[in-house]
Image (cartoon, rainbow, N blue to C red; front, side, top):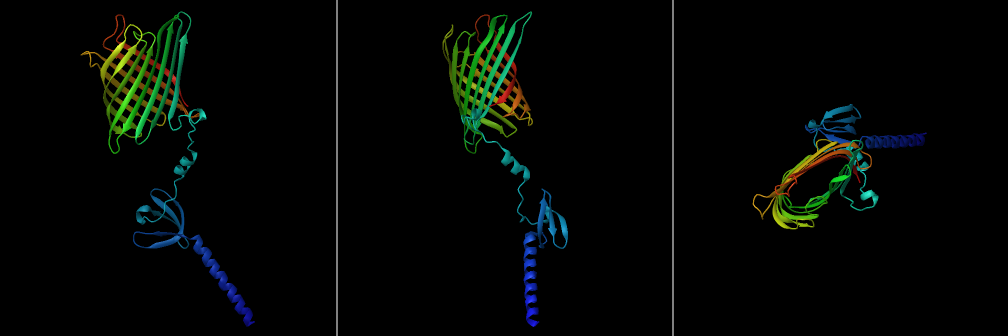
Length: 317
């Protein structure tokens, strides 16, 4: 009987030790209050202002963070985890891997009328952009065709490439810009412009960017009645505003004063507003664009202003 009692005692001791171990394992979190007291228990949940902590004796406690020492490891925020997990990989243009890492969009606008008048208008725009800590690149292409009663009133193509090279720790940058114009109805057939200079980012945040540019270069025209090279300055200002998750606005103005003829200049003003309609694929937006090109010196019977506007659907590629 004595031996049996000893055996039962040993079994009881082992059960007590096991229970104590399991209890300790289930209350493995420790918090320290600013008054120096420590509590062992289990962290149930937390927010930016408080935590819920379950104590084996006191039960579930709601404690303001301002009363705690900053020693409790923060639980990963569900929103951030989900955002990281659901962010789609960029597989490039149409999944081919080409232009991976670039923002890509295509805008198409088409309208017309038949009856007393026969009008057809077409606008196609391509926009590519990429940014890093060292460089910004943007390529734009715009084609416009207008026909009224069988006569073309507009048929032109514009391509522009901007390269901005950022200086570490500075709001200054330097840039070079190349632009090619083809216009079937102008006094020239092709015009190439190249400029280099410096710029300054006045504001550079995710919601708003504003910058200015000052450069030097020139334009060369070929074909038509006018052909030759014209040296000129570049003075520009631009802004982009992400109004909300679905609205964005971009505005730019660039002045090209002639270095050859005093008082002669070109000026290009651009306005783009986009309203996101759907998250389908990489996004579908309604886009309103306006651009005005002014030239102080034009041929006879030619207007100084060339104003264009379009309403199109902008689709991510």
